[in-house]
Image (cartoon, rainbow, N blue to C red; front, side, top):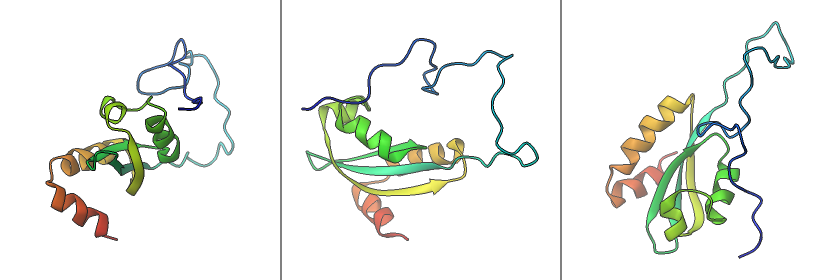
Length: 120
């Protein structure tokens, strides 16, 4: 396996947000102060693993998350069962909605997961 661009968490990084934690007094640059920031969509994605199983997860950057799974830095399940390919992904307006959809998808039998893949 080659070198991976994903190292461990940096010092001061949150488990939920990989970037450094900003102090309350820190200013965040604003591109357009008159317009509200557009929320970043979250995605539910489905991977096919080497053993033929499926793995469902959520991310706001699916490409980076897939690379993390490939490098063995993703979920514990994908470290033991490396992913082969990304089967599908769906956008959701926020993390909460994506998390609920992921939970629902994980409870479905394999046949329903296949049907989820076929839906537009």
